[in-house]
Image (cartoon, rainbow, N blue to C red; front, side, top):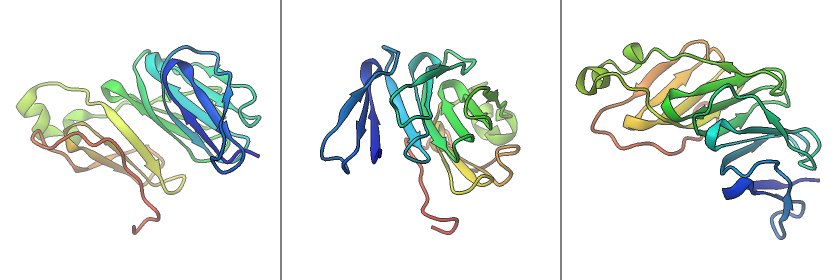
Length: 182
């Protein structure tokens, strides 16, 4: 059974069945760079990357199916919550979610005027890159991105609040939690 996956340039997907001692290449069906992979169990995983490429597997990675992300923006991170539920973030404020294993992806619109008004006032209209997404449950999650921004949801992404941002803050590349309090 699958212990882990790694993704990279030219559509590279590697799979380990022995705790990372060895890695086997899997056919991805794309030559585009892949930036992130997230698995919920040994059979189900999602991978994302350049040009809006979005892939899913339900057979431990033996086959990866291309899915319609609805965007050509670079997708930078993915977080699987179950075999059917996942979130994807990317360039230019891209935020996508699925509740049907990736057969359909919903594009979420974020109100940047409400979330980061000081940045909009200082720099003009922006659609910041969203670099990382992490959920600790099906309802509570965070996104990290440009302008040191951290967004938080407690209602499965229906609404988001900015917990931190600033035009003088450095870009955040990743976010993770062990539990709601840690």
